Amino acid sequence: MSTRVIAIDGPAGSGKSSVARALAAALGWSFLDTGAMYRAVTVEALRQGVDVSNEEAMGDLAREVQLSTLPRVSVNGRDVEDEIRTETVNEAVSIVAANALVRHQMVSRQREFAEAQPLGTVVEGRDITTVVFPHATVKVYLTASLEERARRRGEEGEASVARRDVADSTREASPLRQAPDALVIDTTGREVGDAVEEIIQWLKNKTLS
Ligand code: DC
Image (cartoon, rainbow, N blue to C red; front, top):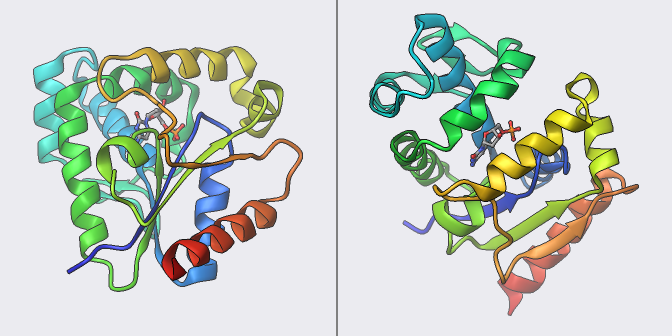
C-alpha cells in the first residue's frame, strides 16, 4: 500500500500546527502532531519521576507508553492535552527530543500511524521531511520571523523559543534541517488559509506531473 503523506517541518511557532490541521481538514486527510508525542512522553517521565536526561530509562519509557494525539493528546489513557504546553515541559522536551532511543520509538509509531490512514496524512514536526518520510508526496518547510513566532507562542517568550531553535537545530540526532526539495513558505504576516492554498496547489502540480 502506498502511504500518502504531506510532511511539514519548521521551527517552533512557524505555523506548522495551524497550517497542517487546516490542510488535513481541507483534504479530508488525517493529521499528526509529532511534537505532541515528544511532549506527552516528557509529561509522563516527569509524572513518574524518570530523569529526562537518562537515555536508557527514557528509551524504555518511550517504548512502553501508550500514546494517542487524537482527539486529544493522551498518555497511558490519561488526557495531557493541557499539560504538554507548560513551561516545565517546554524546557524538558528539548532534552527528550535529543535522545536517539526516544526518537527511534517515535519515528516507528509515526510511520505506523500514516500507514494505517485510508486517504493520507499531514504530518508536522522537525525531522518529518528529512528522516521520517523522506519520500513524502509533498515536503514543506515553514518559517517566520523570530518576533512573530514568539508572539504566536504567547507566554513562552522570545528567549525560550530562541533557545529551542538552537537546541532543535544543533542536536546530533535528527536536527531540524530544510530538505532541499521542500516548498519553503515564510508565514510572517500571512494567513493560515494562504499557506494552505499554496500547498494544495503544489500538491496538485506534483500529482499531475
Ligand atoms: O512542535 P513542538 O514545539 O510541539 O515540539 C516540541 C519539541 O519536540 C520541540 O522542541 C522539538 C521536538 N520535536 C522533534 O524533535 N521532532 C519532531 N518531529 C517534533 C518535535
